[in-house]
Length: 310
Image (cartoon, rainbow, N blue to C red; front, side):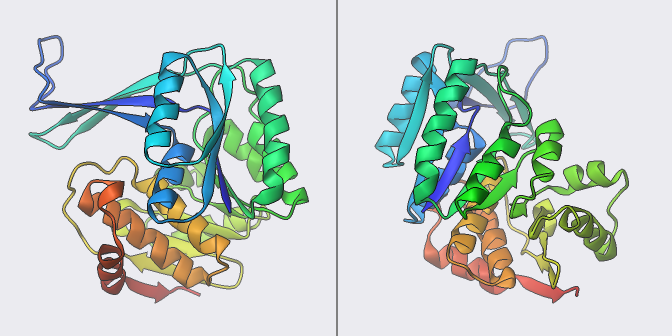
């Protein structure tokens, strides 16, 4: 089974406007409220794919209750620590005229007691999970080395850890050698301190992370596809160009879900990368996790071109 961890869940409010006019009155055309947080998003995709998983995290207040209810309605299994702090709310503004998206995210907050309870629960649940996904930002009140701690705990139980984060928490966690990391193009460029211009640069970027003890690196490249690599082999994955149905926000989490699903089944590196890239592309084309089905995934997989880099 797959365990996803979301230490900083959010209630995501998405509003659709024709065009955002700063400093002026704006009329909203559509509004949608969703349970958010990167790990929760991964669990939603896995549940849609009928893959056993459980979402673990910390929630609180009215927003927390709404998130819990939304997940229950979608039959997503969860185990949340309840906090005295209100779960954050994020605002996402989409402009129909330009397809531009603006995100305004709150920070989130938890207590030391919440983290203590979370770690106790994690220790109990990790026994039953072969694959663990650690993803997303950290709320105030959490030490930056929390992901590093969780990787240590998971590895002692033989679980493979997928890390999808950034900043100091990513750098500290990297020292514990998670099984897989999934930086995007901007994140890998920031790590290297240089621009990625070609496949050779991608290979160097992956090698930098593999040298830290990571077993697999998946660099997501947006509509340009992805690059997946281990010490022994590396593949450039070219995805087909598709029209953005609703949003690209969430495509990265969908890709992580695909990686987790294939890793949990011990699939080959190439097949893991192709499936994850196809799943993310299917999300962008369909505009919704619920609209992704086997036929859509297979069609996109058949349109993907793979180049063996080494």
